[in-house]
Length: 346
Image (tube, rainbow, N blue to C red; front, side):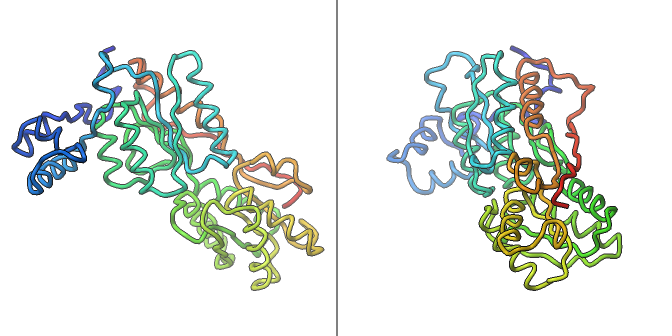
């Protein structure tokens, strides 16, 4: 099915093996041999071919021999984790939106590593998905090049990148955390602590920490009570260990905000084990509106970012682009509603 140029990323012309051959100054047969592990090609020729592949963003089409059309019947989605209920809800939203389209979902997870995302994108593109949904807006330069060269619709989610690859369905993690901090400050809290991960792999977690510090600086409140504990995603156990460190270092902390509801639940349970009343002795807040936050005791104050809707709306945009039905009036960026869910823990 043909599509208007507005339905695709900037460069819809997908590089071919012939393009690689021309760039490297060899035949298509030589390129084909170079791409086989045991192909008889000199080291210099192989280097030239791989340089051309990198420059063009070419991906070998492993489905070409068995398909007579460009329709493969599946879309790819890449999430950071498969044991996180937020991303499970997002995947469910994608699946539900695709239910009557004949398109199937191929799901991969990165463990919060953009290098792993790059490998997954390349592997998935070899099977020629009809569209790709990504989590976050931070990718390696090669990932961006591969996707821009693929000539298929791409939707980035869970973020609002400054330079989108194609379309976006997400929210500002910095602004979402800032909203929570302001709400808690309005309730009278003044000594804020923040629990997050130890690495920069989770860029969304880093953005939340930035939002936390920005608002406290604007309010003239201390913004240095930060505990980094564990590689993302921070577990329930690590949340409990982190709050112990927080209160040992700053015992007068009156509210602890965690990067996710899982770590907040761990912090809450550890406080209760130690005889600390929540929120009377120390308040706890999380992020993500996980199911566990609604059923803990006390229930956890958190930020709802409509995880299911992120997946559903991303899939709708992908579907419309694939079918040539994309509405240009909608723009390339769709913002998801964020709201603070006030409960008993803070």
